[in-house]
Image (tube, rainbow, N blue to C red):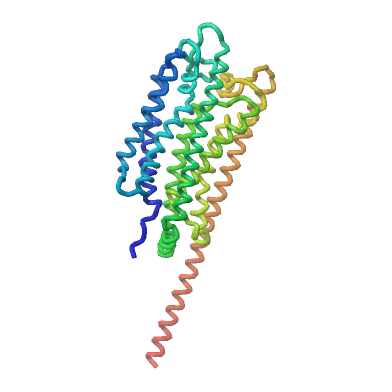
Length: 381
């Protein structure tokens, strides 16, 4: 009987094409960001900016359909292709919302000039000709934009999780695991470890690049009511997404925990790497811990470093901010120590197992030689 094609092999094809398209979109957004100019006219802001959201998203969707094939004759594969093709357009929207300036331009209801506000992080915005109250509205639009981006990211993560659960239940996962178990029994597990190592290295570099992109666009609300909740999503969502991505890449090994504990526990390494990157950066943890109202600006006298400049100047708040940065890096070092200890234990376990296996092999060889000598003695007698 022909075994069904493992679901994750089909999924890998879509993952590779989606990841490639997403990196192209990231590069495209950086190019567009350098050239983008808001009209700063309430009559045209929304209409002008909406084209930047809609047109590239539609093009990305059609390109993904072209690359993967529409699958009109196969309903199941067709649904998978269409859902998979929606990921790059959604990611494009997430990128624009995380940037913030596009949404802020669309919401700006005053006339002005599109300039760089160096005092505010720095950030391009529509500087009004008369009043300065609009700067506060502009900052609110930036935070609202990133909240919408996080909501869309949550939608992508929820859809991916539901898709994985459905496939685990209905697409022959048990048969696939049995076949995987047979393959594991045939080898000593070194292939699994190498595969896990390579995927971890690649995923870690992707996460490093992702954090640098997020760092450029990240804006702390500077509001004690929202700082912790807003920042926690940057810690949790990418970490869980990295965990799910590792399951997709390496394949689920639910039945192999006893024989291959390292490979199963290795799913947790990319999420831990992401947390380490954020804690080493410091500004995310410092934002979550900031318990005062203020404005997210660059403190040029301090490294330079982005921070929530308080509305009412209090000398101790900059000292508190510096303490939060140091504490954040201490937590990052602690998590790195956990990974280091886990790797050391894994290496020691492999060394012990290798010695045990060598001892067992020597005993088996001695028993075989003894049997051969006994057989020769019986034949001679």
